[in-house]
Structure formats: structure tokens, C-alpha cells
Length: 472
Image (cartoon, rainbow, N blue to C red; front, side, top):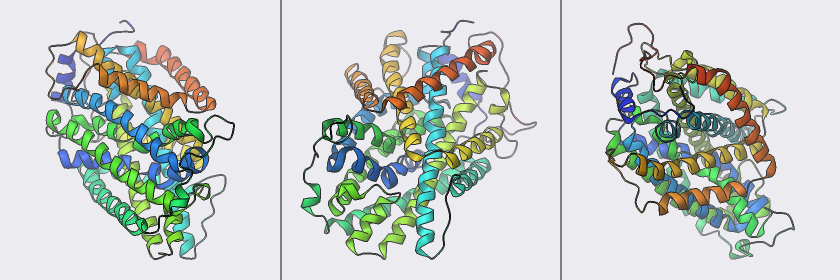
């Protein structure tokens, strides 16, 4: 079998038809999954980091740059998700357009997005949890090992094992809570905005690339891109959507649009309340509320952050295990990653193993390192998905597309260029880590995955499921 063997759309449709995952998600569930993943550490934690270290009040411009890039990429994701309703997101799309090797590279790259994103959010959750505990007189030490971050990851995994519908319903309620509280933050804080805190809007560059000035705006876009990661997580649940051709584009684009409006409003109010150089803290929104004197609202914000970050971890861990499920189904990972539980019909062994590793990473790694790795990994995936739309329009023009990306090739090219520009703005050390990670992935691919890959062969590998598992 060659390195560029592609999966036909007939194979993908057959996998969708015989899949063991339960189809139970409607457009509301899918939109809530997207919002649940998007609104998290990016707005609750990294807003302060990017403003104080990179962009200052111009962080709003950084957010707009990221949002535009995500909008173009989101349109590309929507076409693929409606056309290829199989679990696996960009990994599955790459298998259909560019072949096995590129599919593996994207699948390996997506581990940076979803697994490390869960670790990053867990560290952010821990910061708010420790702060809230301090408010009520409890001191929780967080030293070399971040124990709260480790524990919350394992609790999220337990909920995911129980079932996708239960997890999605829980997520919907959590999304409603955090969205309402962010709106309350904007309304309550708007009257305390001081024009002086927003001046100069673009602070002068310090002489170092990425430290304020226009280069700081660009680096801020790369950092805050993490805040938008999540709409693509909707596409990993395509095989569990009731009507993927209609509902996947709705979930992807609606979640992205709603979150962009909320983000810009929250960032504008926060930076207008507190000078940007005082926001290098673990809980910037709580600091913003404290600066208004509305101290009764501070614990509410922290509680909402805890709920909100929990829902983000829920969606990201869900996405990661579905990527592993797809790669195992194709033989690129061992069968254990595709094992589905007899009762819950979820990939439980994959969820358990992934959660253990993620919890260790969350307990031992700083949030800045994690967030930048997640951003560059996701940006790379977005670039490749954008290019994939153009490729597939030429190689498979007759395949039914329930949703079509408008203005091709302008939209995919624009999305790819903006995402690539944000990658360029990230630190060299982040690029080095990405290269090392991809090199390790190629060793795994040539050592195991390529020899076990099954796409394009005549044999049909049975999906791995516990005995007597009921089909949806």
C-alpha cells in the first residue's frame, strides 16, 4: 500500500452507515459543543497574558484577525463535515484528499490541538479554583505538580465514558451558564470603562518582535487563536450527529459567530477597566470585576469560569478520543484505541488512557508553553484543511456537497494565508517543539502505522467493539 493511498467517499460513507457510535446530537447540541470548546481558557485566562505581554489594548485587533482566519477555515470545515459525516475531523478529510501520509501527519498534529488543549484548560481551571478557594479561606498549594488540574481531567474523562448524549446535555447547561455570566460581565463593567486605559491603543514596540507594536498585534493573534479553537471540534462528532449534512455547518458557523461577538465585547470592557500591564494574572476577569468595586460579582465570575472551563475540557477530550477512534479504525493506531464499550457505546479505553496522559501533562507543564503549542498545531491543521477544499473541488467535483464553501478559491486561500501568518508570529521555540513533535510522529508512522494501515485494501477490518454491543 502506498504512502498516498486515499480513502474513497464510498468507503467513508460505508463507515458512517455501519458505525457503532450513537447518532443522538442535533443542531443545538452541536452548536453548544462548539461554544463549549471555544469559550474557555482563551477568554478566561489568556486574554490577560496576551494583553500584558504582546498587544495591549490592541488585543481587540488580534482577536479580529484570529476571528477572520477562523471564519474562512470554518467555512472549509463546514463543507467537509457535511460531505464526510465520519468521526475524525481534519484527519478524515486529509485521508480523502491527500492520502495516508498526510492524514497521519494531521492526525498526529491534532493531538497538539485537542490533548494539549485539554491540559492547557485544566491548568487555567486550576488557577480559578485556587483563587476561589482562597476567597473562602482555603489555601490549596500548587507547587511543582498541579494536582487540581490533574484531578479535573480525570473527572471529565469519567463523564465522557458514561455516554455522548449525557455529556452533550451536561455541556449545553454549562455553556448557558458561562455565556450568561460573560454577558453580565460586559453589562456590569461597561460603565466602569476608562478611555485612558485604552490609550495608546497600540503601545510602541519594545525593540523585540512580538512585544507590542504591530508585531505584538500579530503575535497576540497567534496566542489568542487558542481562544477560538473549538468550532472545529464539532466536526469530530459528525458520526454522532442525527442529520450531519444539515446540522454540522450550523454547529460550526453558529458557534464561531456567537463566540466572536462575546469575545470582542469582553476584551473591550476588560481592557477599559484595568490597565493592560496589570493583567498578567491567572484570573483576569475576576481582577477586572474587583477593579470596579463590585466584589460580589467576583466569585460569580470565578464559578462561571470553573463551569465554563469544565465544558471546554469535556469537548476537547471528546474530540481527541474520536480522532483516536478514527485512526484506530484505519489501522494507524492499535485496535485498543477503537474499542467501544458494550453498554455506553463510547471508546472507553481510549478515553481512559488519553485522560491519564493529559492529566500528567497538565500537572507538570506551564500554561504558556502549552497554549502556544496548541495554537501552532491547530493553525497547521487549518491551513491543510483550507487547501484540501481546493484540491477536492478538482479531484472530486461530482461528490454531493450539502454545504458548499462560498467563493472558492478565495475563501480557502485567504484562510490558509491568515493562519500561516499567525504561525509566523509565534516564537521560534514553539516552531522547534512542533518540528520535534512531527518528527516523532513520522517515526511512529514508519515504524507501526504504515505497516498496519488498511485503507485501500480488499479486506474489511471489523470494527472493534465489546462482545454483543448493541448498534445504534
